Image 1 (cartoon, helix red, strand yellow):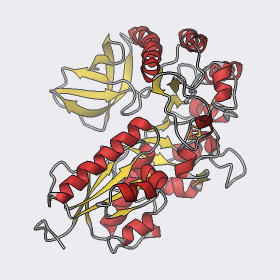
Image 2 (image 1 turned 135 degrees about the vertical axis):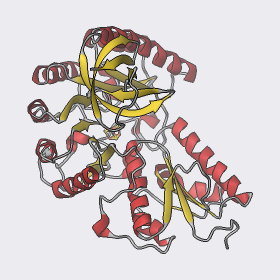
Image 3 (image 1 turned 135 degrees about the horizontal axis):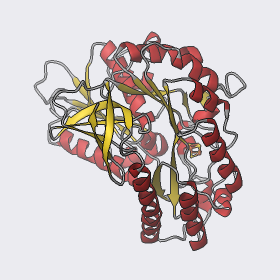
Length: 435
Ligand code: SF4
C-alpha cells in the first residue's frame, strides 16, 4: 500500500479555523501518540505519509480555505507524496455527502464528534483515561482549554450549532484534571474557550457554574494566567467578575462578542439583548474590575443593515472605547435563520463598512496605547523574531491581540514573565525595555 518508503506511518494534522478546532486536533494527536503512532502538527518537514485535515465550516472565507487545503493534499496524494488523506471538522460535519461526491480521493470523512471512529482508521483504540491528554500545537507555555462543546443559542447568522450540536459542559473535575495535566506539561497561561463560555454548567449543574470553575482553576498551583474567551452578553453572570477581581491569576481580560449594537440589528441577529442592556453591562464590568481589558467581535453587512446602523456602531465604539475589536463581514449561511433574509449588502460594501468601523477603533487603540507609555507591565515572553523578543501583557491574548516588542534584551526566558517599562506605543503594539 505504501507509495512512500516509510518504515512507519507518520501522521500530519493540519488544523484550520478556531481554537476549539485546535483543541480537537490536539486531543486526536494525544490519542494517536498514546497508541504509538508517529504524529505531528503542521509538519513543515513533509516527512509524513498520512494527512488529517481538521476543517472549518463557519463562513465563506473559512470554507474556501478548507476546500483549498483538502485539494492541495489530494494533489500531493495523486503525485505519490502521500498515502492517505482524511478530513474531519466542521466543514466535513456540515457537507459530508456533497464533499464525498466532489472529492472522491479523500480516504474518509469524519464529523466533529467522531474521534473513536477516526482512531479506528489507524487501528488505534480510543483511551478514555487519556481525556485531557493532548499533543499540544501551541508553544508549551500556553494552551487553550475547552470547557464545553456546542451551543444552545440561536443567533440567526450562525451555523455553529449545526456543526457542533447543543451545549455540553465538561464537569469541573474533568476541566481541572485537564488543566492539571497542562500545568504539568509546563503551561503557565490557559485560554478558557467554548462556543458560549458563560453558559457553562447550566446543563449539568442547572446553574451558571463558571464562577465556581474559575475558583477551582485559580487554586491550581503553577497556573499564572487564566483568560476568558467567548462570553455571551445576555444573562451574563456578573459573579465571574468578583472572582476575577479577587484572584491575581485570572487576567483582567474579557472577550465578549457583541456582533452589533443597533437594536434593529441585534433583534434581526437574535442576540436576545438590547443596546441599553449592553451599555449597562459594560458599565457593570468596568465597575467591578477597574482597568479590565474588554475585547469584542462585530459583524459588518448583516442583511438590512442601514447607514444609520453603521453610524450607530461607530458612535458606540467612540463612546465606549473598548480595548480590542475584531470584525467579520456577514456570510450568508444556508440553514441558518438569517438565510431567509435578503443578503442585500453587496460584498464590497460589507468590506468597506468593516474597514470604516475598524478605522474608528484603530484611533481609539492608538490613543489608549499612548496612555501606557512610562508604565511597567508583567509580560509573558512568547518568542524571538528578527533578533527581538515579543511578548504580551495580561490584556492581550494570543494571535488576536497586541504584542509588546522588547528592546535591548540579550537573553530572555521564552515562556516566562519579565517586567517591561513601555517606551513607545503604536496603533496596536507596544515597545519597551526590561526593568
Ligand atoms: S453564541 Fe451565537 S454566535 Fe456563538 S456559537 Fe452560539 S449561536 Fe453561534
